[in-house]
Image (tube, rainbow over all chains, first blue to last red; front, side):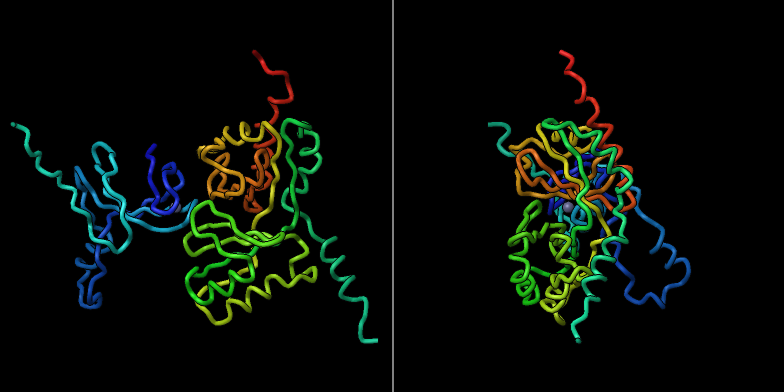
Length: 101
Length: 212
Ligand SMILES: [Zn+2]
């Protein structure tokens, strides 16, 4: 089971949360101008990332608030928790410095 | 005489007509309670009001002056007198007050909250029939809860006077630690019977002497 840190309530069991799918899928600017294929892609097509994936969760049994996390889909490691509306944080590891001295 | 006995009678009638969600477990709770070890009972018909309002807005401040403050963080409980306000979310609170505060029994709490909200952004909703209240008390009450709740209930983490939304026996509840060895549990009405029986089952082992 995942232990997810809700930004409001702190670490809680995964069973208190619901998954909201991929984060940062923008609503189309002019939905009426989309053809069926584009609309279907907006509604149903999502990335299937192997590695760090930005996704939405809601703390449904707790504070009932939505938030984003960055989760590694291989290791299930949660790398960042950040609010709705915020940009995806940069998690590229800083290059190790001064290794050879 | 304009002042008739009608309101008083209707209040008594209102109350006598009501059946609390765990009424059918009343005797089982009495039989299953272990005096001085762990005791379970239902507190019926508490007045509960759901509030959604920003704490920092003017409406929020008006409501806070009625309730005796609005809690700021997860777990916090504020209040005045016998009215308490539990934190449910950053802009969501649960007011818990005695039965008599309800307008069907002549109380004016809900009306006062509605007036405080006025045309401000938010809502005041009578949720008194949404949940019932269980009281679990005694030195073994934490051990009973720990069988079905994944929160850290150790007193160094979960202090008396705080309340958290969580799950007990897979039932979503608000768990309010009212004293060092006493808890109030708020399950929704339709889950009350299941959770009541679940708690009775979890309490049963303490009726027998501890196996060394
Ligand atoms: Zn939360």
